[in-house]
Amino acid sequence: MAEQKFRIGIGYDIHELAEDRDLIIGGVKIPYEKGLLGHSDADVLVHAIIDSLLGALAMDDIGSLFPDTDDRFKNANSLSLLKLVYDKVQQEGYWINNIDTNIIAQEPKMMPYIPKMKTVLAPVLGLDITDISIKAKTKEYLDAVGKKLAIEAHSVVLLERIGG
Image (cartoon, rainbow, N blue to C red; front, side):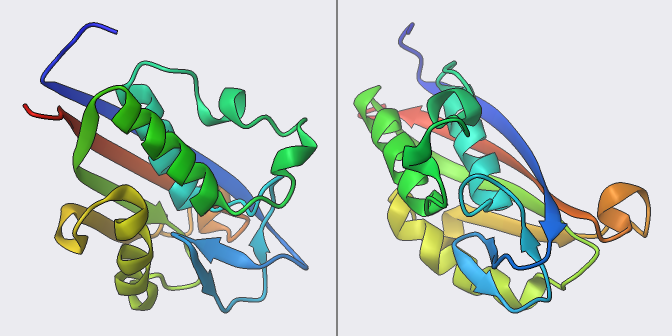
């Protein structure tokens, strides 16, 4: 990888809502009648962050690194996957300057859980909570998210070379 002072990455993820699953977003279990369907815990926000970190490093995406065909990742805690990816960021000589994210869900309301999400994510990523932006949006009843069939997330990350 060419040595650069800054690198930026974007990430996106979407998971279907399903019965008999816990709803875990940003490492926080949110009380709701459905959860997100996926091979791991399906934490849509953490998955988007992982992809933004991998994108900034010009590496493969989350599905290549943690394939859903590998039983080692069945019901995996996405925070542990995030930690592995953050270790890669550091190995490449970078630290995270800041992260900006959106959670898009018609239901449940995310705002009450965002402060806890920041306190869970910050230590995993070596950040202060003021370096993590998490915003909650709806789809105004449009598409699968608006019809309460799925939840999606977007992430943008800025990496800075260690020792700058």
